[in-house]
Image 1 (tube, rainbow, N blue to C red):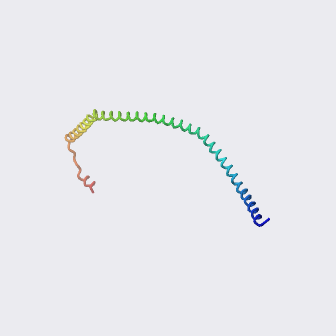
Image 2 (cartoon, one colour):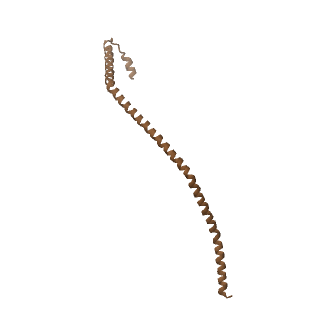
Image 3 (cartoon, helix red, strand yellow):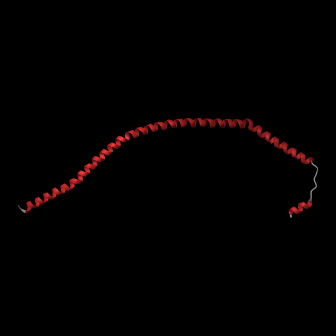
Length: 134
């Protein structure tokens, strides 16, 4: 055997050892990829019922939102009717009520003025005013 043949045998053995050392991580990587594939498949199978339930939930929410929209429209109509009734009441009774209040105020002031005019004059005590000022 020559030196070249021994070097070739050593290189071949080193190559076999290298291949064996690299084979172990490659086998483990293959197993990991198989497990990942199985996990993805299970997740896909499990997501279908969730998506179906989500669709049912969205349909129910849309139905409820339509009902709320109807209630909101009714409340808006009630508010508009209340505004119209309030303005009608103000236009119909507001003016006369203000006039009646003004008339009663005027009569009360006139009555008080008349009472003061017809009342006998009272004596005023000048000393009490001076002491109150001091």
